[in-house]
Length: 145
Length: 212
Image (cartoon, rainbow over all chains, first blue to last red; front, side, top):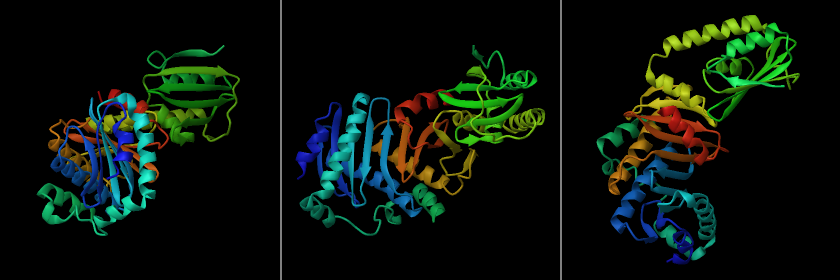
């Protein structure tokens, strides 16, 4: 849908994929060579769980970066959606971070896009529902509350 | 001319003793893992110390723990402020007693790692936390945070299973004014709170070194 904006990120050297998902883990838009929708949604769920768990302690995460030797995931969090990039090149990180900031700002101002996001947004945190978590997750979450 | 050297050859207590007994006014600069510490002498007294994020006696006491790093003594440099009023003799004796006490209680390798991480420029707090969220060693009160750290790490681990990768080397979270960094340490999690201005690319090499 907003492929024009996502392509700004996707065209950066080393970027293998980019996605926007709602806070209910619904994939709103994506460009990816390597990961299918199921995997992307699964990834989004785990990222959202980290964000939601931090919210329980009144800690708002704005950025998240996960690094392997040759692969990075860089996440921008607005309260209603996540912008996630998958990258294989460490040389383009600064450019990628800046471009993500710019794209996030544009998406937040795009009324049509935000209307689409709101359709899939929930006020309550759905990703931390106990029936969706395993035992080890429930144990740790119970220590937070 | 400045006196320069390495702490492997001349330890911090010896440098303090030397400058105080010579009644020097001087600035001692110590560089350890990219982080700088300063001790100022005024007429043979320790007048001021800085070691990020601490100042005064706390900074001085932390600098006594350093066993390696480059140093430089510049004569004639006056302290910018006076943050220490204790006589140098007492200051040094108390500081060294503290070093002995801490080292005796620091037999746990996790505590040693935490202390090493605290010497990395940009690290403001450090802890080792188990995957069940228990605090194993720390430099600050992290008990409230530890289940959250363990939960975040667990979710990243689950995410890596989706994309068929090993555990990541680093996880960085930017919260309001705090930047945090997590990495695997043995079977536990090394957790750090960082200076928000620090560049991630700069700090990771020093963190790797501290954990190796």
